[in-house]
View 1 (cartoon, rainbow, N blue to C red):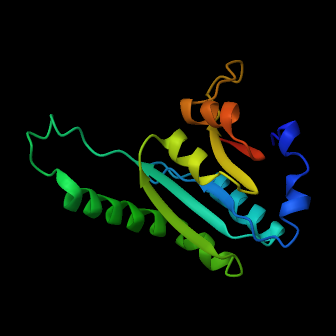
View 2 (cartoon, helix red, strand yellow):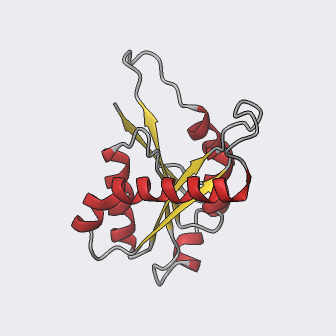
Length: 160
């Protein structure tokens, strides 16, 4: 758990009613149950809404040969990513029926999307893949970026 000194008192001052969001970064391609479970439990404990966020990137239009582009194609892709996100969260939604969940997908770089979603959040939850060799502590690019830039408390959940 990382908390910036300038954000340390914000949870009790601005979030006393428990309604500011807990933002959960979700990779729907390789979802991690430990990270998702932590996000749901954090939202439940704080009596906050859980905003599950997945970032996606549109394929490069140059490599597509001009087909499949445009707003209609992007909207269809966003809807498909949202269906994937809903499916990934379904088991936890049933277990944590008392947690209000807002599912969000956005086109863009994952770190940028998460930082924007976490603006004013009570907590941002992301994962960190633990390498096979414990002597190599390393964070991925998304986790590294949010560690450096998040203005809210941050929970980094290690997973295999």
